[in-house]
Length: 196
Image: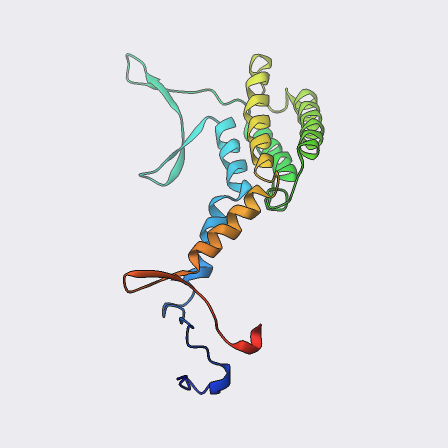
């Protein structure tokens, strides 16, 4: 027998309806957290710091120059940056133009990914070749810079192949909608009949 709940007419209530947990926003917060963690902008920021020879210090929660060694006089020797601040900002900006949430949540074919990578590679080469002096790029390190940026761009775009990232998010959201009831895990079902 169905009972009227919270002023909802009896004909709109299903017996197998499991109400959501009382803490509001549990699904929204978890989904937002997943999306935030896989945001390509985070990778662009890491690339920028990598080009500046900086590493994230988890304890202090800040970016710091990478220490190579300490000399016999106790002076700290830092790793040389691949380029200066201006160059790192321009390169990470170019990276974001190709690799962003719109791209990673798309459905790209391998042909589309390859075409985008060729265009991006040409633009990156032009940017670095025409500005290597202004960006303080050592010619001997140009290939390493290309590898860092192109590999990250390629693997970010691969996440969109065959809706990979979009399917992952759909699955994650569905699994978050599973509610723990007692010792049993049951999926959310039912609700109001007029929403069907």
